[in-house]
Image (cartoon, helix red, strand yellow):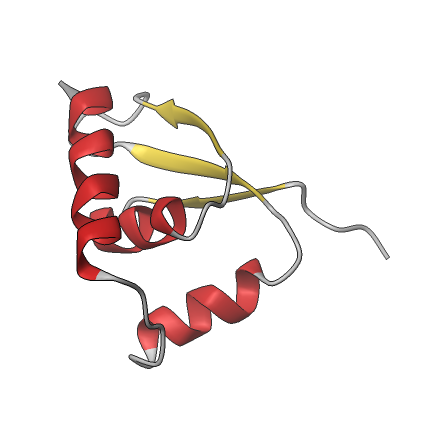
Length: 77
Protein backbone atom coordinates (compact mmCIF):
# COMPACT_ATOMS: atom_id res chain seq x y z
CA UNK A 1 0.00 0.00 0.00
CA UNK A 2 1.38 3.41 -0.97
CA UNK A 3 0.81 6.19 1.55
CA UNK A 4 0.76 9.78 0.36
CA UNK A 5 3.56 11.64 2.16
CA UNK A 6 1.78 14.99 1.93
CA UNK A 7 -1.60 16.35 2.92
CA UNK A 8 -2.78 19.64 1.44
CA UNK A 9 -5.66 21.96 2.19
CA UNK A 10 -6.63 25.49 1.26
CA UNK A 11 -8.80 25.88 4.38
CA UNK A 12 -7.17 28.43 6.71
CA UNK A 13 -9.02 27.14 9.80
CA UNK A 14 -7.95 23.55 9.21
CA UNK A 15 -4.37 24.57 8.49
CA UNK A 16 -4.28 26.65 11.68
CA UNK A 17 -5.63 23.73 13.68
CA UNK A 18 -3.07 21.32 12.25
CA UNK A 19 -0.25 23.76 12.94
CA UNK A 20 -1.51 24.31 16.51
CA UNK A 21 -1.50 20.54 17.02
CA UNK A 22 2.13 20.51 15.84
CA UNK A 23 1.76 18.80 12.49
CA UNK A 24 4.67 19.76 10.26
CA UNK A 25 3.90 22.41 7.64
CA UNK A 26 6.15 21.61 4.68
CA UNK A 27 5.37 24.52 2.38
CA UNK A 28 2.85 26.98 1.02
CA UNK A 29 1.90 26.40 -2.60
CA UNK A 30 1.08 29.72 -4.23
CA UNK A 31 0.61 28.34 -7.76
CA UNK A 32 -3.15 28.97 -7.63
CA UNK A 33 -3.99 32.61 -8.38
CA UNK A 34 -6.63 33.12 -5.69
CA UNK A 35 -5.76 30.51 -3.05
CA UNK A 36 -2.81 29.16 -1.13
CA UNK A 37 -2.42 25.43 -0.55
CA UNK A 38 -1.03 24.57 2.88
CA UNK A 39 1.02 21.39 2.52
CA UNK A 40 1.64 19.28 5.62
CA UNK A 41 3.66 16.14 6.15
CA UNK A 42 1.20 13.23 6.31
CA UNK A 43 1.90 11.89 9.80
CA UNK A 44 0.19 9.31 11.98
CA UNK A 45 -3.14 10.56 13.24
CA UNK A 46 -3.49 13.36 10.70
CA UNK A 47 -6.50 11.82 8.96
CA UNK A 48 -8.28 11.41 12.30
CA UNK A 49 -7.47 15.01 13.22
CA UNK A 50 -8.86 16.28 9.92
CA UNK A 51 -12.02 14.23 10.42
CA UNK A 52 -12.25 15.58 13.97
CA UNK A 53 -11.93 19.13 12.68
CA UNK A 54 -14.85 18.66 10.30
CA UNK A 55 -17.06 16.94 12.87
CA UNK A 56 -16.21 19.52 15.55
CA UNK A 57 -14.56 17.09 17.98
CA UNK A 58 -11.02 18.52 18.03
CA UNK A 59 -10.17 20.34 21.25
CA UNK A 60 -7.23 22.65 21.72
CA UNK A 61 -6.40 25.70 23.83
CA UNK A 62 -7.66 28.93 22.23
CA UNK A 63 -4.34 30.72 22.70
CA UNK A 64 -2.53 27.94 20.84
CA UNK A 65 -4.96 28.26 17.92
CA UNK A 66 -4.61 32.05 17.83
CA UNK A 67 -0.84 31.74 17.87
CA UNK A 68 -0.97 29.28 14.95
CA UNK A 69 -3.24 31.67 13.01
CA UNK A 70 -0.81 34.55 13.55
CA UNK A 71 2.04 32.32 12.44
CA UNK A 72 0.26 31.33 9.22
CA UNK A 73 -0.75 34.90 8.46
CA UNK A 74 2.85 36.05 8.84
CA UNK A 75 3.90 33.37 6.33
CA UNK A 76 1.19 34.46 3.91
CA UNK A 77 1.96 38.19 3.90
